[in-house]
Length: 446
Image (cartoon, rainbow, N blue to C red; front, top):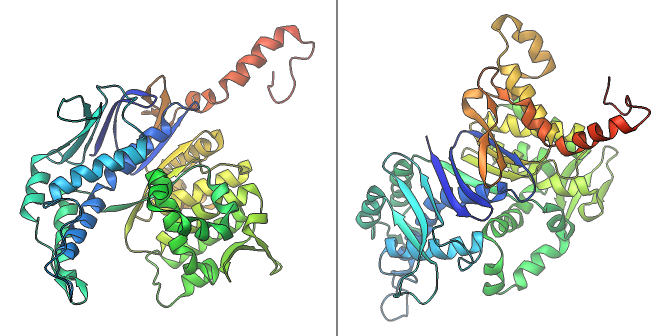
């Protein structure tokens, strides 16, 4: 079981949690939900960082025709030192400057009992800056990096694919993590609103400007710019493409497309440099003229369906999927996320919505159905959406820490935690009630 510990990072004073296949975080504004999500992103993408550094080292050490000798490795002569330098820069791009952080800030991710990585701060006269970022790698990871420092080689066609495959296999086994990470940040509508200008804006940014973007947003931007052309025939065309053999059964892809249509009130297409929502009558709306709800959710939907069709396992980190959506659409997008989770993917959600949490509870509850009643329950909620309590966890982020929200007896999220989201409003109502002449109004009941 993978474990994360965070101490004095952003609004988080201290938290420890075990990572499960499906994780949800809720809590008050600026309580630290995004800090936890970014920490998981930071650690879970390190194995890809190592692969990219190893490839860069191999390519940089390859003689180029017409040049004298070989290029030097851009970072360092060995991957371990290069990784440590890269992780320092990555920390700054993910969490901001360390100067204003507490000197005893640290965070640790334990992938296995023997594989872990710790990030901490220290003051040392050897370094010019306060709160120097210190990287501590576990012994087995250091041993792998030393042993494979010069493992990858280059052929006339590029990196030797067989060696790269072996390198990845051994590395991912050490981490015991075979998931790639797709981060979908909050505030997506602005990126969608600038759809037609986005490619130009990003292309004209220099390296310094690109580095000023936080790493999660930069990852998201580059991903959607890269994948847009894949949707030239829409989601239906993507599924029907001979080159895209779906990893999911046809029944599930049909179900996913049905949920997308309910949420988006149409289908998505990228045509002639435009992102479009295709309506039922065949007409379309440019994405920058669509509703704010459509702009917020369109690339959540696209990415979920795109990777549903792929063979690779994905950890989706999705911030506030409910943004700008009507409660019914919040229900549908939560069901789509659950369907994807059940197809060998993994999910991390942050949410403020009682509708999202309520839907998750329904899907957890459906899974507890006795065998003799499952046919009837399947007619209400398809079994493909049911969530397994043993692979699910939910936390409430509050006062710099986290509290487990799961009820161990009924195997659901505690109702009082869902109600706590609207507690302030209900408290005001209760205070008003003795002073009003009509206590039984507006859904409060008797």
